[in-house]
Length: 476
Image (cartoon, rainbow, N blue to C red; front, side):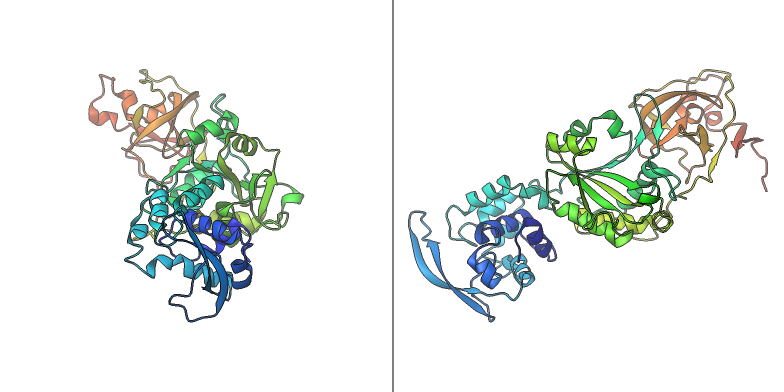
């Protein structure tokens, strides 16, 4: 039996449909009294399907019909379809509008929930209040969250937050849990999973990948989410690590103890299960909490939020899987959110190396001959050639870039004072989520009269693995 919205959603979402999901769930709630009606319990018929064009079992029942004028109802016995299972009903209902394409043409082409509800009145149902009833139920029970597209015709805004990261107040970078995923939670999502997800996003996906700073330390989850729209869906992204008690593999989804898991929570749970498995401490993969800052802030602030723990990095099997199967995880993640993925064309790029073997010591600070031009948050800068290292605040080391970004432009999202190499400042760049030394910024030397444009784009020397080498050296 289908006794909850999540159960109804699980059955209906298996099948392609021209209905908005919120419309189908409102129909289920209204016409089956949340799965408790006679037709639902005796005939697995949750939306009053009659027997027109049906050759299967039937169920006779007295019914009340609107005469189409809104002021007179006629009671009579009708024959209804008797389905063998809830899934048989779900399959039939999802394709219902295709039975009579001319009758339901406006409902099929509807771009909004409101428009489709109106198109179903007088066609799908004779009830002259049908539109009002559908929209009221959708609003009262918050059913828009089940839709894969908004009333604007676009998918709902999704905000993915990479957990941990930069503390904007003191410049400290928190990598999060590490274990057998050495780069840590924040960078695993920001550098590996999020870029891989972009390959699989449906064409009309409306998604924000937040990696600029530690939202927990900034304590601005609610204002951040609502800055993208009041109905923004938030997924805060983590993975677990710990001692003996946490050494078993598996992940889970965390939600507020005030709520039951919705369709997205369950889809994410299933995606985690299909990759790293579910942690045995959470039998159904869902953990209800009331003692986590962002969970409570979201619940109190009216934000549609959940926190995912995608695996246990202190378990070698999970950690190794997470390092080696970024693409598989990214694809499962996208499908959990949107119910579909776009298959990329051509060869897929190799994900970055997920280890710290690319780190090396940077040279001690030496005063530059001339001052570099400084930049502020929001400025656009160009990466200078040669570019041999990102700066890692947590270790004060350099890291070899996984690809060549020279000549590309990025926005500065954070400025921090340092003393390393020839640089006194370092810039956090949006898009690559990495720190760039000022000596590697093209525009930082733009005012140097003694350099030509060609000279601005090259050095007489470069540091490779911490060793100063002249340009032109052949390294074997």
